[in-house]
Image (cartoon, rainbow, N blue to C red; front, side):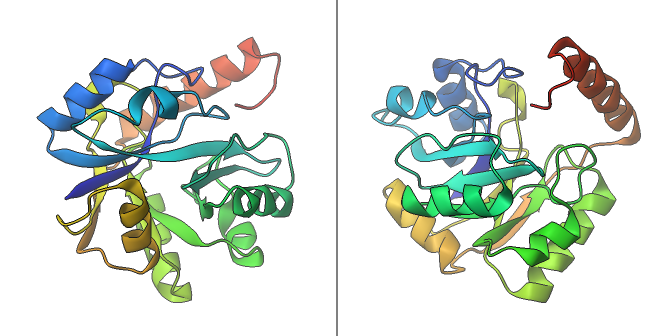
Length: 219
C-alpha cells in the first residue's frame, strides 16, 4: 500500500486541496494511506477520519523556531514557534512521533546539525518538493543514524498527491497499524519525485513573496 506521509489541504495557508479532492486524488493515484500534515493546523483529520476509501493518519507539520517538524499520530494540535526540543516534547505528550521534515531544504529545513542534535523519532527521507541533492542527503542521513524513515509528496494541490510515499503492508487496516509499520521499519520502499531547477526558482520567489506578505514571518 502506498502511504503518502506529507500532504496539505485547504487548512494550510498555502494549500488548495479540499477534503473531497484529497480522497478522490488519493484513489486516482493508488494511495491507500495519507498523513494530513497541514501547517500548524489539525482541523482536517476530524473531517476525513471516517471516509471509507483512504486511511488518514492524524498529523501536522509544525513550525518550530528552527524549522519544520512533522508530527505523526498525534491527538491534538501542536503549537508553533517553540524550540525544537519543546516541539518534540509536545509531540510525544500528544502520543505522536517527531520526524525531521525535509532537513536539507533551504528556508524551512532544520539542517543536518539540528537533525542530529535532537531526539527525533525519524527522518523524512524523501520529499516530492525537495531538490534531488536534498533528497539524496536526507536518505543518506537516515541510513547513517538508523532512524525510521518517512516520505511524502508535500502536495499542496490535488494532482501532486502520491508524488512521494512509503510502501507499507497491504494488510494495514487503520492509522495506528500504519504508524506501527513505519516506526518498526516494516516498509518495502521509499519513493518520491524531486523538484527540478525551474520549480526550485519558482518556489524561492513564491516563498519570499509569501514571507513579505505575512509581514516577514515564516510559515
